[in-house]
Structures are given as C-alpha cells and as structure tokens.
Length: 305
Image (cartoon, rainbow, N blue to C red; front, side):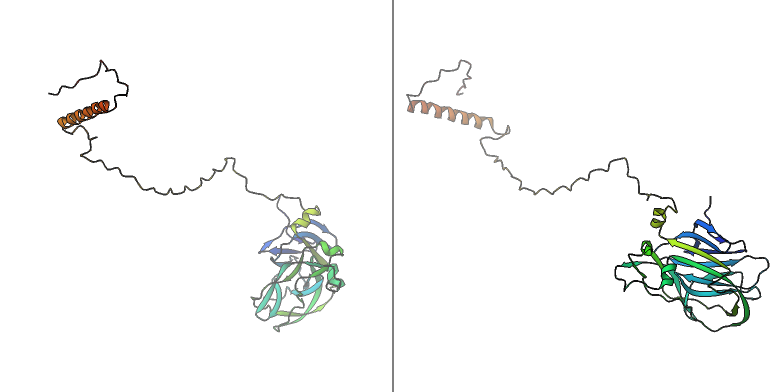
C-alpha cells in the first residue's frame, strides 16, 4: 500500500512537504473540521519545501501563511483571477533580496541547563517541531512588484532547556545558503480571516526517525548490515623473507692429485701402490715390538713384473 503524502481537506484544498523534491510520507494523520495534522520524518541539514494546492471547482481568493516553529514566515495569495498564478503555492525559503533566497532546512537542536541561554519565547516553545500552513479568506485589492522580505528570522541552532518537555525534540527549522531566485509578483489583499482564527490549518509534526520509532508512530526497522560470507576468508600468507645468500664454497680438484679419476695412467697408480707397500714394510722393521698381522690368505699379491 502506497503511503499518503498529502493532507486533504473536505474544502478541496491540500498541503504537503517535500524533501529533495519528493513528497514525504505522512504518519498517524488526524482530521477535524478546522485542522488536519500528521507526523513526518525529518533529517538534519535536509532542505525542504511546503506546497499548498487549491483544487476547488469554484475558486475564490485564499491566502496561505507558512508558520515554522511557531513563527510566521511568509504568505501566498491564490487568486483565480490572476493570469500568472495557478492553483499551487510553494514555499521554498526566506527571500533575502529581489534575486536571492535562502531555502528552508532542518537543523539540529542544542540543549542546555542554563535558562539564560535557552529559548524563552512561548510562541516558539509551543510551536517548535511543527510546520503549519494557515489558510485564510482574503480580498484582492491590487498587485505590486515591490520586494518585501519575509519576516522569518534565523537564530542559528535553537537552544532548548533540557528540563522542558520539548527537550526530546532533536531537530528544528533553519535556513540554508542563499540561492538565485526570481521573486513572484506580490498581491495586495485584505484579510477576511486572521492567522489567529484561520479558516483551516494544516500541521506537519516533524521528528527524527529514531524518535518516531520510540514513540510507536512508525514501526521499528532494524538497520540492515551486509551478510558475512559463509566461506571463511583465507588466512593471508606472511611475505617470505628474502634469504641472505651465503657465499658458495668452490672446491678445486687438482688434476695431478693422487685421487685422480680413471683417466689417470694405470702404471703410475701401480708405482704408487708399490711405494706405499714398501713404506709399510719399513715401519714393521723399525717397530719390532708391534704385533705382527697374520697375512690374509685372500690377499691379492701383486707381481713385480
């Protein structure tokens, strides 16, 4: 089911709030003959606009007054006789000059335990956390192109006494950076109804999502986290340390050594063996006390020839 984004009166007029040019969803809407209200979700530093639409078949001039946090900001006149005006009025921000405007936005609220620093204006304390559009009947008396600055004053981050009931509010309204905007043609009117006793009131009660969930106004939605993979992550292999190269030992083989390979002359090897045998015999004669070794019958006797 698609969420409701507009408060609609039986008189044929409606109002809505847009964030990032998209109408926000309404929660827990209430309707009486003189007032329509609903909760909306606010986000810090997000710019917003408020739209009022007159869908009546037989239209008469109406004045729509925007009230932010209890402070009247600006007014629009919907005159069916005006050529350059349609049945829709959009409040986009506070006009600073004929060519610049500061958009409305949500800001964070600060808390203090010092009553001298906290807001003391009863009008703001009663209205903080609300966006209202007050609809009044008017009588058009003329038009003008003169520039009139809206009355809304930005006081920076609103500071609330932490002991008040309003301390649970986390956001208030404020102004963003100036942007270029062409001013519309102003209309001179006589007010049949006053803002103290308007024909109709649209009220949007804005709160952070966390507060809306805690108050049970919207269902709690757990934050979604990325599901961890069931496959264990491979253990990273530590980088191998480069082994220090040891000097290679080089063995040089003398080709004239007695331990030469089979390429050596066989006669030279025979002479070496005879010389060694003679040396052993001399040792036996020099050391007669040494025990004689019984000759091995399997010994190989070399012929002198």
